[in-house]
Length: 109
Image 1 (tube, rainbow, N blue to C red):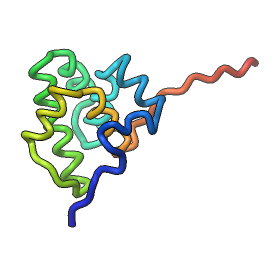
Image 2 (image 1 turned 120 degrees about the vertical axis):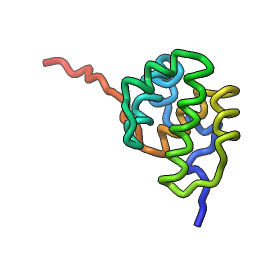
Image 3 (image 1 turned 135 degrees about the horizontal axis):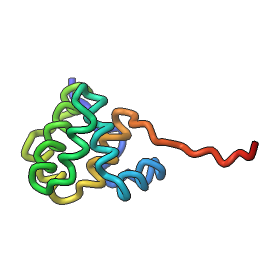
Image 4 (image 1 turned 90 degrees about the horizontal axis):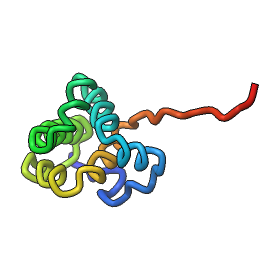
């Protein structure tokens, strides 16, 4: 049984914190998404900084997320998404796997 993504590709604003982190530091979200499917966080995060190689590896991770969650799609579609709108794709994947967002407390002691 196949299903759809929990959030649409342009639903990155559903989680504004994840959206901002992904826009400012896409390597963080890419690494955390990779970690969620059992891949090395540091390697995938660093590879995100290499344009075409990064898109290929992010597409591979997206495929693993789709496979784990039973979401329909293909490697070609995943690659095109990561070439055309990488931040939206990363945020969508992050929402799907529940990527943690670091929080900073402003409480005075």
